[in-house]
Image (cartoon, rainbow, N blue to C red):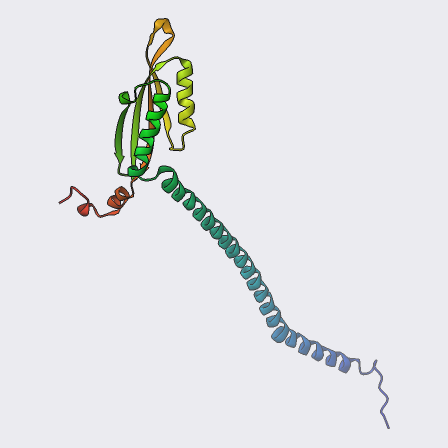
Length: 203
C-alpha cells in the first residue's frame, strides 16, 4: 500500500524541501522576529531613559523641596531677627538709652556725657544708632562696662575702644567707647521698592 521511501534515492528532494523550509524560516525570522526584537530593544532603551530621567527629576524635586524648606527656615530666622532682635526704633531706642545710662551710672559716670547719633541706611531699610560713651576709670571699670554691654538683650555692639590719655600717673584711663545697634525701618524698604519718580524728593 505504501511505496518504499529511500532517503538516499530521494536525498535531492529532501534537501530541496529542507532548503525551502530553511528559507521560509529565515523569511519569517526576518519579517516577524527581527522587527519585534528591534521594537523590544527600542522600548527597553526608552524605559531605561525614562527611568533615568525620572530619577533625575526626583532628585531635582527633592533638592528643590530641601532648598524651599531651608529658605523658609532662614526666612523665619531673618524675620525673627528683624522683629525680635532689631525691632522698631520708637520702641528700642528708649530702652537702649535707658540701659546705657543705667550702666554708666552704676560705674560712676555721668550719663549726660553720652552722645547718640542715628544714621539712616535706606538701601537696606535699617537705622544705625551710634553711641559714644566717654569712660574715665581703671581697667576694672572698662571690663565691667564691656561685660554688661555684652550681656545686654538690646543687641549692642562694641565697635571700638580708643584711649584718650591717662590720669593719676596711669591709674585712671580716659577712654572713649563707641557702641552701635540697628533698628528695623520697613518704611525705608518700601521707599526703595517704589519707582524712582514716586520716591520722596522726586518730582
